Image 1 (cartoon, rainbow, N blue to C red):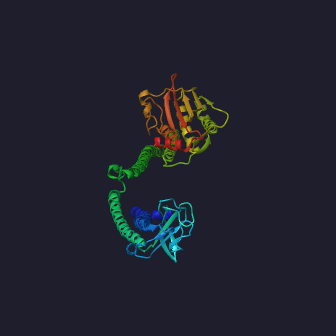
Image 2 (image 1 turned 180 degrees about the vertical axis):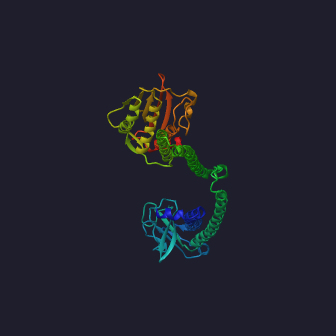
Image 3 (image 1 turned 45 degrees about the vertical axis):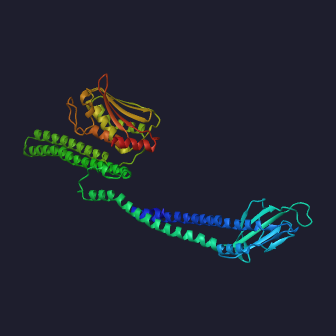
Length: 480
């Protein structure tokens, strides 16, 4: 986490260079170690052939004619070999029983049993100095000494490692110079590539900064690198949402001023009339009209505030009991239903029916649906509240037996201030808009349809309380 916070304070260029250059250094170190090992193996391969040549020359000068093992040392060859090895050269020729021995008797023995006529090379230490030893064994032409069987002769030639080490170090030094140059070149090229890669993002940032605060047009994703386009798309979505919120607030201000200006002007007119009137009966009528106009203005103001709350960018969504909420709103509209002698019915489960939503806003939406149904239902009509669970959702529906909605205007229901052309009653046209906005903010939806027997049914489709987070986000994104 500490490293993540540190990297967030760095630019992408600095982050990539800081992380990649050490990685390249590690890869270069591994490559140098591999080069050194390869150089040592190459030196051993080359110099071991020289050791084998000395062994073969010495083997060619071994004789058993005298009954023992005799070696005619080719000193000229040994001197030449010492010049080639640039160091000391030691040798030892002996039979396996050790009865006959020529050369350096304490030369380190082979660590494994030698195979006949198969050379073996190994590293050892002789007189405190590291040496490379070549060993070779073969059978003698005839038995020596008192032996009745032919014995094997073992030839060992050793050299100090000066030439080998110098050869390996030269190769490694060349590799170091080459790798340092490659590392510096790679870092420089990487910086240039990063600059060219990030330049479209910098240009895009300059274009966005140059915009006015009110310019929320989508950013052209084609001007960004392919890998950055998901980020640009996300920014465009966020800007679209911000634009939607700004437009909604602007519409709310315009709608509020329009909806309140007319009632206030009417109130002013009615009040002026009451002040001029001297007849008590006319004054009483004027005051009654003012009271009704105030009730209407208050109702419109409350609806506008409810719509503003429903249009909020985010609301808290919690599990709530829809059955209990339905009983609560049904009790609240009983007086209004009684005034029109309307039969109010509640058809739902007795047990809790949990959904995801905001209790206060869902209550507001349900009350608006019920008030609409009671308003458009005829005298002694019927309004039914029904709750039922469906796969993946829970439905809260309100059905009335009123005149219904013209089919061509059904798609527009839920728009602000829209009223069907067959609506002869007053109203602000905000009730269904509030219900639809609340449903969408809770991750659900509002549907409105005519009933075949006459009337209309409005249904809130809500998510059950056990819906997963992905389903909620998907529903909210679709509604927005």
